[in-house]
Image (cartoon, rainbow, N blue to C red; front, side):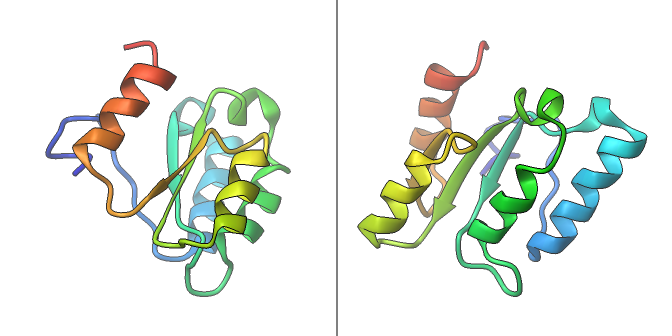
Length: 114
């Protein structure tokens, strides 16, 4: 969806949160200019879940994470999960799967400068 709608120039996808954190930490160390502008995060992932990812994400430099939009994109329908996600300062918003053109349009209109 992201590629087909030309929403981003570069897309990295990770099944495991630990792999994503390794990649982010590598960018912090070696290529901060490559730190993503937007992250879509699922709550339910194998291994480390989305909540644990956010706890580790908080430890990354604010000068990078402060410029990154973090959206929870999940099939979770538990209202507590939605409320919890929206109450975290690191999370910009919560969207239900699947990712749609409407969601991308909301992000473009409400969260980005394009």
